[in-house]
Length: 260
Image (cartoon, rainbow, N blue to C red):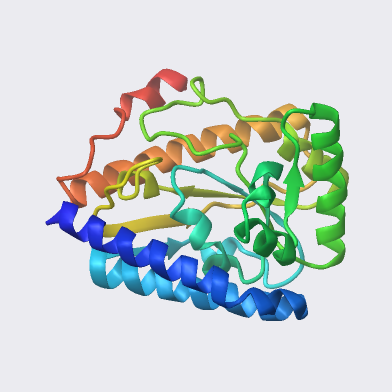
């Protein structure tokens, strides 16, 4: 049944996405707000497909930690494409720090560019840092939340921070904008694997954690981001496994004891 649901979902998902990309090219000639409306409409359709075909939905915890207005940095765990399609539902009108190569994808890259993201060239460290800093300062002026994945890419649920280290770009952003950092833990990878065709039913949990306030030492901030995201995401994965036994078994909670 899970396989059949996944086949149907992928068929509808890619078909509808292709139609939207081709049919709404004229929207690119209009102001950004129209492309934003189109993006949100597409994401609502995708959520409907996830819920009705896959039986996959989500829950949000810790929203009280989000400022009611202004710009702030969300440091998110990244296990799946799933969370990237929920950021507008979670945060309104966020910008996302992403690799520059995505802007080169026909049509899709044009839409991303129109949404005004922070694109970085990962092959050039100095240029990448400059892009992060200037992009973050610009978004702060626009009062938009900024989402960055500190590990830089999607990470398999079995991987540890040692397997995929946390990058320093977020610290440069934090130090040069005086914004708070709000960690975002999740367990999406158990339901929607990193590069998996198969999607599983259940409820993904997103959990915002208490803010890391401005002005703290770089090393202390980096350690706090890594420790809190790794611990909470692992606990959320174990919670999901206990609720949905058919999911892949996450790493043992004993890992947390070894890190303390």
